Amino acid sequence: MLDLRSLYQEVIIDHNRHPRNFRRMPGAVHVAEGYNPLCGDRLTVYLRMQNGVVADLSFEGEGCAISTASASLMTEHLKGKSEAEARREIERFHTLVTSGERDPAGLGKLEVLAGVREFPVRVKCATLAWHTASAALHGAEEKVTTE
Ligand code: ZN
Image 1 (tube, rainbow, N blue to C red):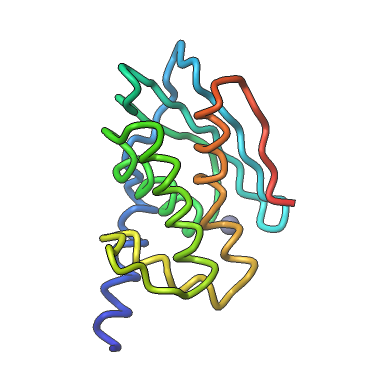
Image 2: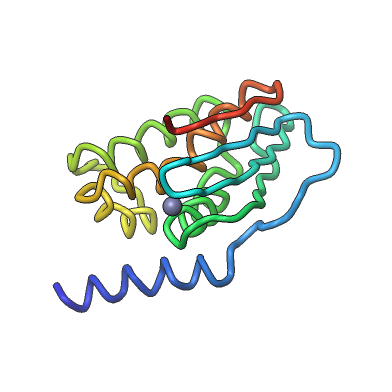
């Protein structure tokens, strides 16, 4: 158990130090800004849709290790998904970090974030990027706040 815990921490530390797809996407139509006032996390999510599929996904901003790692893992997880699939995955992630119900299909690497459910403040950090991506899927520029 201890080993699993430290493995989880390593994934979070790695994605925080070296966030994947951490860049602005000039000209992106699907853009949303997210803000978590409880922790001060701020990020912008950029999405490029092509033929109904998330062709590219990136983010930038500043936040705590949990919010940055979650955003980084999210960009890897949602790329290549259809809009419907992306929405379903956002929902599944939300369930993972809030309810403690085990998803029989599993969520792969994202399960490293399941432990945040014990810390309600951290849940907001972990879900910020996902709420923001959901808003970006709507297309218009939107601002999201966890409050
Ligand atoms: Zn945070």
